Structures are given as C-alpha cells and as structure tokens.
Image (tube, rainbow, N blue to C red; front, side):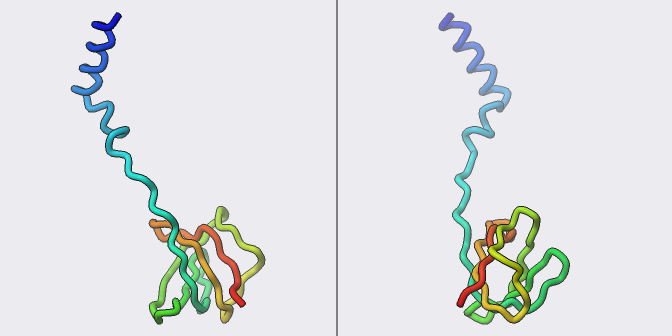
Amino acid sequence: MNRLLLVMITVMLSLGMWAPFCDAQPTPPPLTVRGDLLTIKGDTYVIRDISGLVRQLRVDKETKQERLIVPGEKIEVQVSSAGRALSIRPVH
C-alpha cells in the first residue's frame, strides 16, 4: 500500500499535477478608494480620488451598492486587484 502511494505521488509530481496547489498565491485585500464620481460610462465609473488621480473602475451586477450613486457625489469604493468595484457607498 505504501509503495503504491509513493508511486502515485511520484507520478503526480513528475506530471506537474501539484503545481497549481503549490503556486497558489493568496488573494490581496481590496483597495479602498475615496473620491468624487465624475461620470458613469456604461459599466465604468470614472472617479477623481483624493490625491487627484482619475481612475476608471469596472462595476457589474456583483458590485454592492447601498443606493443609486450619481455623478458629483463623494464615494468610497472597495476595489479588487483586477480593478473591479466590489462595493460602492456614498461618503458624507
């Protein structure tokens, strides 16, 4: 039994089947961006953050919103490392 297990592990390692498990990287935490919502272009929100940088954030049906956000409002957005807005809320 132990010999069979050793052979199976050796075969799996030689075929690279364990690589996805060994190379997995932890997901970075979302970035919080605060700023003014400038425009909404389809599924893209354009904001000017507090440092003056203009950013384009992708919004989809999975993005959580407390209410409808309109251009001119100050907002806080949780952004994934891929640039997708995870949640949007107005800031008072």
